[in-house]
Length: 433
Image (cartoon, rainbow, N blue to C red; front, side):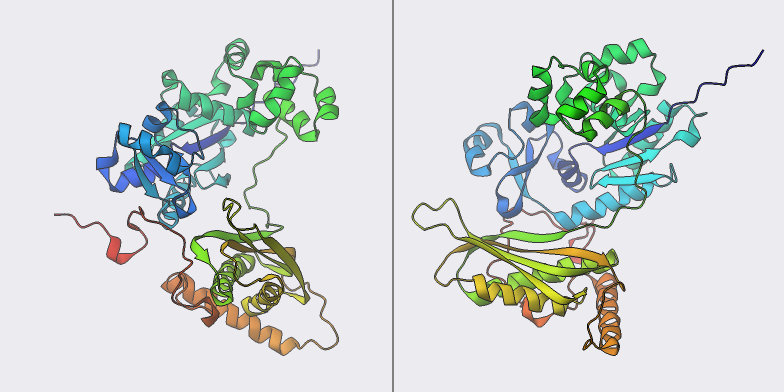
């Protein structure tokens, strides 16, 4: 009699997420902030982009404008800090480096989230393995994390949500350690909007179809949902049933567009200041372009005034400029951007935001040169950009830059409550004793 094959073991995919990441980074270096209601603000100190649990308990929504919270802040002692992006990026790199020690298969999903494939560690106690991750990250960086483990990325995301919201799991939730009935019972208690890729936008449409819980979505007809929504919804149903449809991307795919933009700290009226800001954004986008080994064929530049000034007419405009030959040379991209800026700039307007987008990206070295292009100059350009990037990596961002970026920046982003750059600037290092 032929024996039945052994059932395949489920994949063991973990999602590790830092709790209230920006807030937690600030608390690592300023323990006086522990237990106090704290928000971290967006560019120009506009909106709350991170909230401590104490602030969430007060009902403050993500994205709430800070000026509308002033009365509540005085009443409850809410503190506000400007975003400290250099600090957060450095702390993120430290966390991701630690996690690489726990699995060779890693996808860095966002600044505070990472997937790990732990399938090769299935013989271990993965609950204890998750606690070991938490302990090392907390000990080495001071940051608290939660760990969710499931048979797919979608289930790992849900498990992480349960680890964060339900104290009984002690910050590590492993769906694969549960029986089918236990897991289904838990999924029946979770609203469908908690599913990765569903959210508040699609939840009402699913609810109108009688799909209210995560379990309802798991048991739904995938083919019908594909017709009603998209193939992604069908993949979500498969993932909820433990079938991997979304593999880990251990190497991040090259971006198809690169955007850099900022709102100004104060209105900008003159062309020169706008050109300075555009130069800075092009330099940043070009460095990213070269980092991923790409060239851009089109540069889009845009400017706008504030839509919230009823006493001044709103103006918004943008222009795409095609390059004769795709390039990653900051000078070529800037020349195109400034040519576009000259055409859309109108004097005597109070500009509130500007930005650039690089598109029609292709792998470096694949561009089709025209009859009059000069290969030697291209080689010199590549060598110059490599030298420029190398110096800035070694000596610090913008150690060497184009003169058009300027030195005095009246349009600079407003950061009135910014903490020191504790880990990325020598003069901001903490001094003990």
